[in-house]
Image 1 (cartoon, one colour):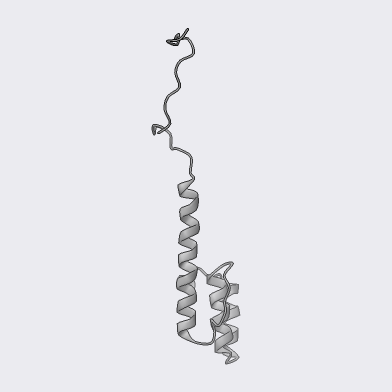
Image 2 (cartoon, rainbow, N blue to C red):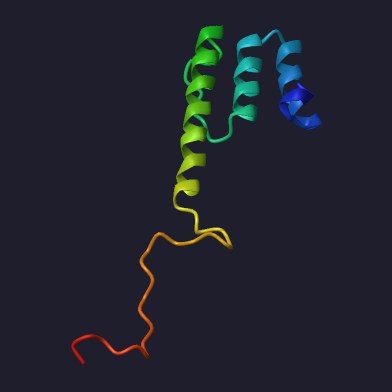
Length: 95
């Protein structure tokens, strides 16, 4: 479970449920600990539910990760696509 990035206290929570033969609850706790801010509907009831919920969570996280990238400010040294402003000291044709 350390491969999932769980702390020692998080692992104890899951392992305690396993020792109590509460496998579905242990599975649910593992999901909750590894999928922050996710809804864990039916996750402990069947392995396919865990898998499907996990895939949905991953897709949602990927969407959230793309949103800030699209609105990110320009990096230093990159040219802007906006047209350059005319210098104010150059007379216009109608002046």
